[in-house]
Amino acid sequence: MSSYDVPKRKRSFGKIILLIFTGVFLLIILSSIISAFFSDGLIESDNQIAVVEVQGMITRSREIVQQLRKFQRAPHVRGIILRIDSPGGAVGPSQEIYNAVMKIKEDGEKKIFASLGTVAASGGYYIASATNEIFANPGTLTGSIGVIMAFSNIQDLISKIGVKPEVIKSGKFKDAGSPVRPISDEERKLLQNLVDDVHRQFIEDVAKGRNISTEKIEPLADGRVFTGRQALEFNLVDQLGGLQDAIDSLAVQANINGSPQIVQEEEKVPFLDWLLQSSLSKNLTQTFSSHVYPAPQFLWTLNN
Image 1 (cartoon, rainbow, N blue to C red):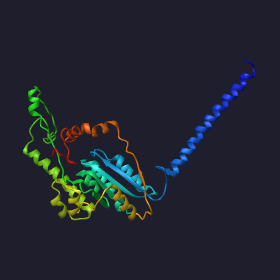
Image 2 (image 1 turned 90 degrees about the vertical axis):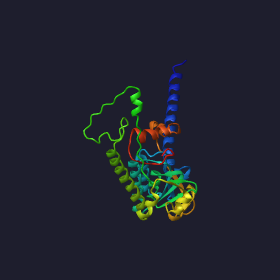
Image 3 (image 1 turned 45 degrees about the horizontal axis):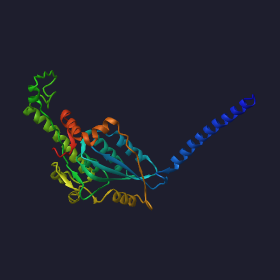
């Protein structure tokens, strides 16, 4: 190999590296341009409708609330669809989502509709009641306006295995609902009052969201579920129809010409939450949330 060949090859290698970096840089620029002007293969327009999904048991609210606030501020989004397929869940997260929906409705700049899927019961319906309009399929299971607080007593089990629990507490109600002893009449009354108060909040919030009196909600608020068609008769929903019907109706009310552009943000679910919400562990999740961790819940289950 001559002394002339070595510098020549070095220059060629340097050019290749330069071309690679130039190509990567151009790809980054091109990707940024595409992201700025395209969404789901369509040019970004002012005719967008955002879809926010509420799926499975409601155990947290942060991601859904963040999506709602994001789309509320987005200038290109003309309206929001809350797609609900949930039997309900924890009271606190349900109330936080409800409040976020109410803020959008009360702000008045954008309409927010609810589209109910297979099940939108208890906490699922609670959230829907805050929207401008509710669409349900005729066979959707909805309603279940009620509160449940379940306990499991394992006193006989632990006695069989020779375990004797000892509890040190600061007040007589500190271990109310303990699974290692029978619940007293005084504790039962206390917890019933707690459930009744949360139930009253449920009724009042549904009445506010639906703009009807609590007197009309109370006879329906005994925990029963309704089909979408029955719910329409009781004014719990506004129209029968699926997700596309809700989108079409919202597009008309938002004065969107032509077909709206649908935008949606995929929810990032941590592995543990995904595991707890999976079909294989659904019963375990319900057992954990309503028995081991006894708290009032806006939840409908076939085990009630």
